[in-house]
Image (cartoon, rainbow, N blue to C red; front, top):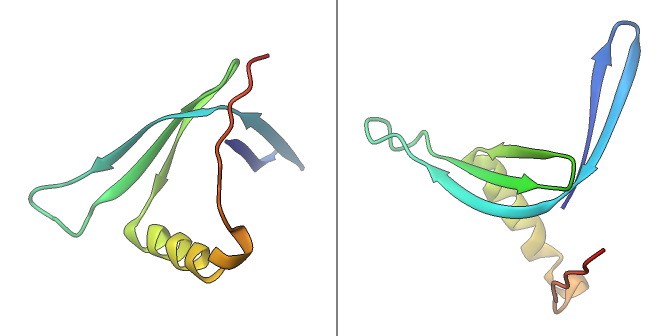
Length: 83
């Protein structure tokens, strides 16, 4: 997984890039408000780690985009390489 972000720092834009392996996917539920669910994607790299939090709407949008491009993507195979 590659993560690229931009952050406003003083008068410049600071660009950060890191990579890591997805370690865990967590569904964060609130029993009192069941509509306030979120999906947490936890990743860890050699020198970095982080959590990406997605709302249900964002997950649906990603899913629909992948479904529409399913033929272009074809069969996916995940390969891991050791350095």
